[in-house]
Length: 354
Image 1 (cartoon, rainbow, N blue to C red):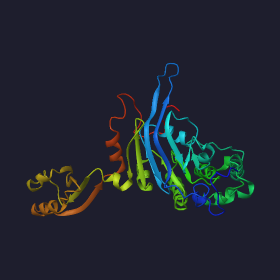
Image 2 (cartoon, rainbow, N blue to C red):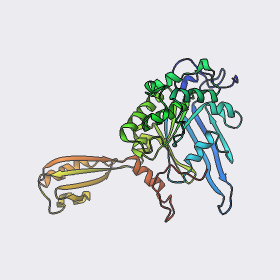
Image 3 (cartoon, rainbow, N blue to C red):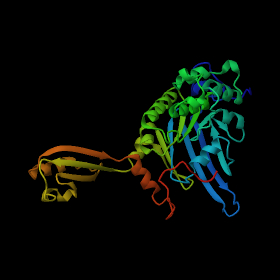
Image 4 (cartoon, rainbow, N blue to C red):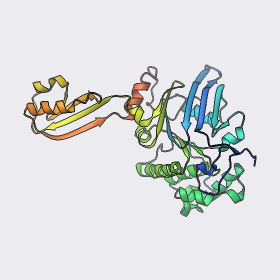
């Protein structure tokens, strides 16, 4: 194995099993992935015009982060991932993975990343152990350094090690895909729409496995169209639109960009309309006994609203608040992303043609 190839430790089936150094004698990089001015233009072909899928993208993914990459149809997510994985050639710019430039050190950079594609690509006639052994061999991992059984155990597949892959459930196959991506113990794991079409229980199991890998030191890059999933899981989120990164921030800071909140009050009796004392707060009557107040969190008018409710002689029997969520942020930032008649949902696994 090339002496510059990221070193493996004997401990742990995860990430920082790439030892305490990024390359021989050097400290771990601050950023697991760093992209500067990344541009990709697909040439015209036949009747298809040339298309620029990425337009000077700058992006840093901190080491050890669980990072979410979101974007609408054709935003460039898959193109970015495929460039990092070495499946698509960039037009301009630079990218490093675990400190290795993808052009200057292609072998080392590819050894530092594991990619779990959305599509299942496992041989149904192999057992999970055989699949992992084969994958490890393709990465040049010596037999003495392979950790197939430990990785299967970490993914909850130890008892299925000798079962044919075709007999595994959908959730198990997803976990096997993650296991395959970890055979060479990369410090960076990319999950491209990993829970698409997976039921709630299996999704939760998969995320438990991913969280465990992240706690062990693996930097995880996630693309998903389940916005609540990204909001719950990710430490940091970037939103890409029309080939450009339009937002990149810690999840909490990103959510704080919309200074909006809603307060819903349910009263002890039906209302004929909004009481005069509450009109200044511009509530919306959403039911016979229900009023909803929308306000800016920075203004914090809740005490004044409750005082006005008491002054109106109303008794509150129930109260709830609604926070800004990632969907609100996403829609605000990407509004107008689609041309009229383009169709499709706000988030999709289909990007620009690769």
